[in-house]
Amino acid sequence: MSATKEAVVSSLLRKAKTRKGKRILEAKEPQVHEDAKRVLLMKGNRAGLDVQQLLADLHDLLKPECVYLSRRHQGFHPFEDISSAEYLCEKNDCGIFLLGSTSKKRPFRLVVGRIFDKTLLDMLELSIQKYKPSSHKDFKGVEPCKLGSKPLILVQGPAFEASETMGTAKNLLTDLFNRGRPKELLLGGLDHLIVLSALDHQHSSAALPPSLSSSIEQAPDSLSARLLSGPAPSSAGGASRSTPILFQHFRVNFKKSDSKLPHVELVEMGPSFEMTIDRHQMADKDRWRTAVKVPKEVKPKKVKNVSTSVLGEKRGRIHVGVQDLSRLHTPHHHGDAGKRPTKRRKTDTAEPEADTAT
Image 1 (cartoon, rainbow, N blue to C red):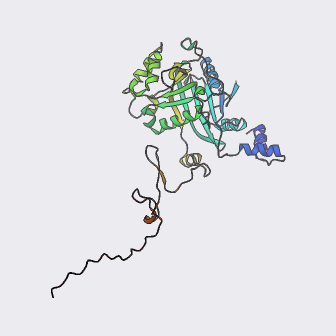
Image 2 (image 1 turned 60 degrees about the vertical axis):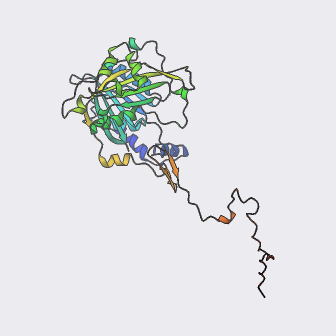
Image 3 (image 1 turned 135 degrees about the horizontal axis):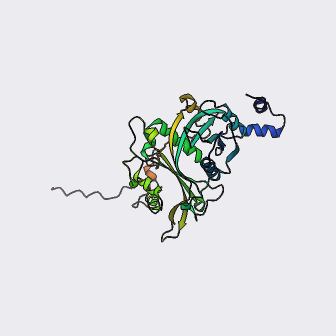
């Protein structure tokens, strides 16, 4: 580690001397309610025009929770030495880094890594194919999404559950494009959709939502045919390598309809590309268990005699004490319910004695 890195680390570890410094250090500590993770975008030693254009598209998609380092990083190989990525993520207060580079063996690759407790948690190396930038002719005339709007994320495909590597890719990519959960939701603010598809060759457009299938079928390029037909069959033992993950970005348009709910139309706006996993570094089980641990303050408090069914219905149980039936109101007993019963008086209702014969 160089002298500059040591100075930065020592400045982060020392105690604050002012109130402002104390607030800054407290903001960097683990919080009960974390904000959306900031993403660090970087270029490797060699980066082609396609790599630079993809990083620019991802920067437009992820900003303002994004930091783009435009200069090239010499000798930066995350799978060999991760210390530089950990240092840059801590310096820029980022939880995820994304490195784009070009080489003879891997002409178009992205390395996505996740940081936990200032060290690497897990990492994937993705090979990019069939890339179409946002400036492609098929996406012209589509209105861009608003700055800072949070996207809807749709993850589909049985291949994500086929192996542990694909499950990690699903979790990492969802965490990459997740911009936090808002407290309130405005229907007009939902203006774009991110779709991550990993479909086998046995699945067709029946696995897609109806609105998404209709939008894809209207697409004028070969991207719709590629998604509807599915990828090529995967070889045994290599499902995680041969199963591509298709990334698509759609514009959400609301149209008038006969009902109260608007009619939703999806228009592809780019970028679009396919990803294939080349190399991966899985998270350690103990560190993963610590990373996904939910704080006690966030866990919902258990309410007595209240349970939730499989369908999400809340059910409650009421314990009724001993009832006093003497005070029970019935339709046949109106005003005398609270009065004490009176004693019956003796009346001369006895039958007269029969005359006996003398």
